Length: 363
Image (cartoon, rainbow, N blue to C red; front, side, top):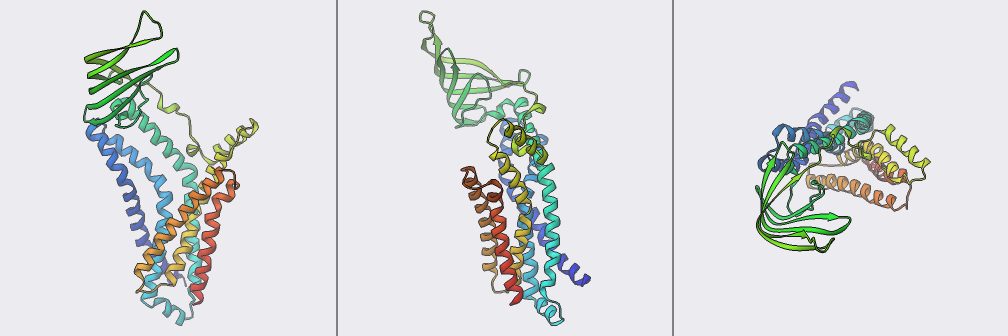
């Protein structure tokens, strides 16, 4: 039995590693495209971008490992089934049910690994990612700039542009809100950017526009002045990135519970904390659910059903995470307790997978 168990588990290894690597790479590609723009147009170093990508990987593994378990189970047991090896096992007196225990043991080991990952590694990587982004913004203020977005990084100004082509901004709006009067507005057809690394800011030379100026005869009032060229300097705040406050997703399990007790004592709603805690624990055990899915599909498949198998894999994966999103929204409304909302996809998915596996074993 040990030889058979090891043989079956080895059948899973190749598909699992390929799926983990492939899915993680695919999910990183979208970010690589965005980060490449920072290197090409903003002057951010390759090493800074590489750090950002590395910090993303632990978070992605929380999705790719359960998916890889599903794909590995389906592919391994489908091959055993289509090559009549499962029939040979039955003829030798070995029921496929005896292969379920090793598979579930592996699923529990992966769940334990993901539990540690979600408790320790993912929160730290989230925080490190945010610190790295902040450090990039301080070293390269132009990294804050993005067309079609209200940019509030250069206090007290709010910057907006409709287009950004290299170091040239088109249709520029710069706002200076004030508590003691109306907002001062600068409008220009075009603006040229020049980074000022020593001052950790940017110099903007605006062309063909108008600027609001304070009226000395009427305090609190503004009047508009047209200009051909107008130069101004915007400075980003020099913040200590190591002192960033942690968000909920950047806290360990123990930190979340301490935060919950503190807020409970102050009479503050702690539902978001409970949701975050149970979400991480429940997602760690998604591996068990996906292994059951994989067993049910793989044991009951034939070589004529490859398209159906692919559809099953896609439907199970999408259905599980759509259910997770839906129950989270319901819990945020207060219609379900956080623990129940986060565990419903696991309960329903596990029951469905176990029932289909039982039917596949009996058939």
